[in-house]
Length: 237
View 1 (tube, rainbow, N blue to C red):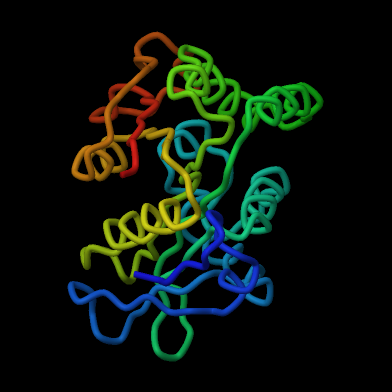
View 2: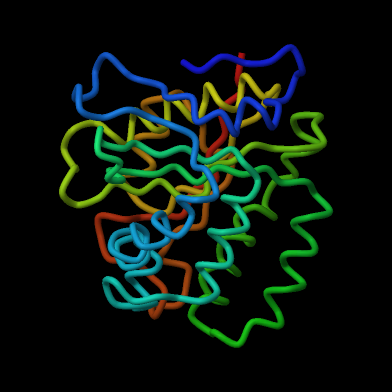
């Protein structure tokens, strides 16, 4: 994994160093590195081709077609990238094979985000994030785990040309180590489909709240085998 500074949080020097994190169980032509600002636009292109159209809720509401931009989702992604905890798997030539967009959240920040959502004109985007905020409101993670700030994986995306190689699990492993090295004790994920839920379960995440898709509007409901939106948490040691 990557080294940490003596500070309980990853220093800006560490995050900006571009330190690569090779994994023995990953193809030799791939490595995991921090996402620097000069690659933000490349990450957005990757997300347009993969996550924006493939993620279960995005797909259910037909948020956008493959390769299309989406202003609100791109702002959300860039805000996460700017926090400095996101990681990507790249080939030796720099091609992005997958990304984990990681961020942190405080209780007050969530409330502000919900207020901003009310001003969003995109009704499909609003419907998705209303549902995401709804599952998070079912349990007060800050009080439950006696913490002021949470670490979360907001987007986990693998390019369709690199799937089947265990990259999602590799990126999750790396993200958990990033969180631990930064001093976080609570790692959360809003797992929208069976694939992301299975990955979280494999790493010991527990479901602390959920919203069955049978209870949501059919226009936002992913088809089977997706059964519920789950708020999943892992305590880092």
